[in-house]
Structures are given as structure tokens and as C-alpha cells.
Length: 375
Image (cartoon, rainbow, N blue to C red; front, side):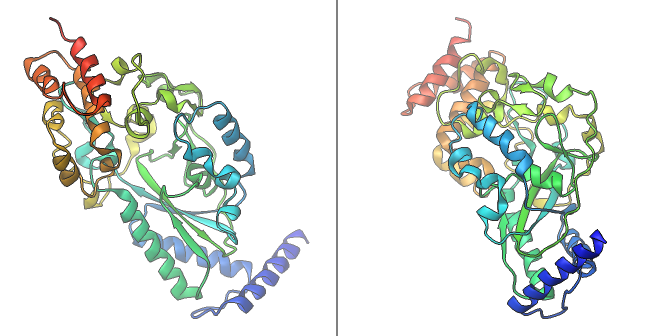
């Protein structure tokens, strides 16, 4: 009886939708039709290179309080945009009025050549997701192609694509869409690891949600234990102010001195919590050529990268996510890494070449790095 009432309600909604828009290829009139459309969308998405495609509802009420508590504790640091949009981050239908479902897409980015860490502290360590081209445009273009394919099937519909471009709780949505579970390191995790990007289509189509899956972290705490700066204050709770990814990418000012020695040679992001995760042994390498390492980042030395002028930085990193931090933060980060490297005349010379840098921020970190060299 309950199922019959649900289907009748869905059919009434579908009839209203039919009255609001023209369907070109098929008239969708029942729950079964929406489920069939979901499977076609899943196939189209996989044909566009997405590893998985899932469907989430628009209710994230359970996650909202956790977000508010995290913000109230100041764990977002200087990322003011995290709090700027209020509750819209946890309420998709307020962010995009009319949203009834969210199509969540995963795309693997791990490459066969990005599996080895630098053998020496003299080499720069860069988060794997940033070794190739900027993923934002690639994913957004694929999402738009998916939206166009859906439109060809059902006619005009309300839709908006997101790839880290708005207040979207993408991990929560992906979890609700059955693409994985939230690992203790706060990232989306699945039985094929965590080396993937996420993108979303907010749609006004009543596509049924796939539903979440059971987490499989068990008693493992490897990701929490490995963190160089102990940024995880509890399972599933990250204090961004101590996170190396935050410090090297999001944080605009001086890096706290007590955290600098813990950063090692990491100059853009940190993958330690993912590298140690047992599930990443089963990760599938990407087929996307755009994600292959560029600029020799898989074997670049710190001294070499520190010598880049602002023009070098902008030219060589065109189309790279790293370009977003700007040349000043780039030099700040590398100065810290040089301060953590094994003392050498080459490293000292590199630091001295920036001792009179016009940027006070860079001079401060260069001075700290030089103070760690004997003599």
C-alpha cells in the first residue's frame, strides 16, 4: 500500500513536470522510467570517462550540524569562504532552487608514474592530484557533456555543474550516492581507494537516490597516525590549521614556526594519509593523459624550482592547479622545504639568492631556513 502511494505521488509529480517542459525523446511517467533513466545516465557518464556515477538526494540535514560545529571551533582557519554561505553548503535546494537530486561523478587521477615518492629530501614533493593539468576544466567539460546528453533524452531541465566551485558538501553527497564512505581522514574512500576527483550536477529531475554503503575502515587508524603535523584531532575530524595541504595551498600568511620542521619537502599539498591507506593498494590508474606529470614534477629538485622567476612560474604552470597559489606562496613553501633538506652548498646558495626578496613573507621563511644551516 505504501509503495503504491509513493508511485502514485511520483507519477503526479512527473505529470506536473511533463506540463512544465517538453520531452523530446521519451515521456517519463513513472518511478520505473526514472530508474531506467538513471541507468542510462550512469552509462553515459562512464562513457565520458567517469569511473563511477551515483545519485544522491538533496537532504544533507544530518551533516549540517557537524559542519556548523567544525566552523564554530575555527578548524577552517583562514578559509573564510567555508562559512560565508551559511547553511547553503548543506542544503542543495537552497544553493540551487528546484534541486531534487544530485548526480555525483568520480574520475580517477592516479597515474602509473606518480606512485613513487621522491627518494631524497632535496626533491620536491607535490600532491599527486596537482602533478598534471588542472582538473577543474576537464571535469566541468565532461559534466556539461553529460548534461547535454540528458537534455537530448528528456528535453530542457534545470541543471548546474560544480567542481570545487561553490559551497558543495561533495564528500557527503558522494557518500549518499553510494560512491564510497567518508574515511577517518575525512576524504571519500572506497574499496578501490581514494585517488579520484568528484564533480556534481544539481538537477531538478526526481531521480531516486542510490543510497549510502557501509564504511569499511574498521579499527584501522593508519591515516590518523601517519599525519606529520597531527592535524586529525579525532577520527573524521581535521583541524585544517595544522594540515600541510592547508598550510601550503590555502593559508596566505606566515606558516607557524613550530609546524615548519614537520612539513619536510612537501611544497604543495600532502598525500600521506592516502598513501598509507590499505584500500589504495587496489586503486585503478587513470587513462586521462591530462593527469600525467608535467614540468618534471615527478623528479624536480627544490633548488631548481626555487630559481623560477614569476614569469617562469606563470608560464610553466599555465593550466596547472598550482598556479592558483601564486609565486609568493610558491617561494614561501620551497624555502621551508629547503630549510628541512640536508644542508648543502647548493641549497644554501639557492636560499641566499632570495635573501633580499621584495616579499617580506618570503624573506621571513628564507631567514628561518638559513638559520637551520650550520655556521
